[in-house]
Image (tube, rainbow, N blue to C red):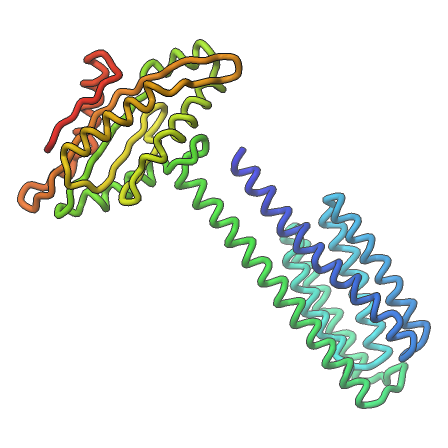
Length: 347
């Protein structure tokens, strides 16, 4: 479900937001180009660009209906039509052939199948060379001054550079956002928002390898959690896990990490040189849960937590690296001794 949501978000950004930006930019440019060509090249050119403007509006409408492929198709065909007509009208010196390269980029960024993208790019290449060869032997339909052609050439260069740069930048940006979402999903517990077991293990390995520092480790398990699920349902169980995470997340030190280890089991590790502080802090966490009223819909209840806690002293001579397993063993002692207690040991 998470994967599908991320894929949908990515598709919306790539095929709707990015395409819409291209279509709307083209639509706005037509507002200025239509009167410009009307006064400089005649009503025929103005009408051609008016038709392209209408088709671009249709692309915007189809894109809103999530018909991304069709929207891209009619927009690309309209652009090809306007480019070919403009090349015959003004000649090669006006710079309209640059749009063939820009259209190839739009084809790559469309949501068409790979074979369709390849086919259309090949058609773009064939069309480009065909028009290029014809234009070498054919005089432009309109005779324009050198300064006017230079103006068009410069304008078309700027439009194409801006178009390609925008598409590339936008695609890179949404790809980075998507990558960030995937990394977050891979390192975070979806329900509680805490680091997951894999992330915690990496953090623990790095911290525990430094034998010059003392560390406190807590293994915590919610007592009789299965009873909550059986009595009030799994939605209530999810609420309990999230509320537990919320309550204890504020207790995590900046030098440590609080994570969901699996099921109803949580773990905390942080730097500490004070054995008494580690023990007292574990007791404080236990009391926080014991005294907190949990409320879900019309149900109100209390919970307790069992904790196995250790303080590993700084020691270069006898550095304990299996502290997590030691804390887990103490956790089971807490559960065997009646639950809702802290079993602590300095090692």
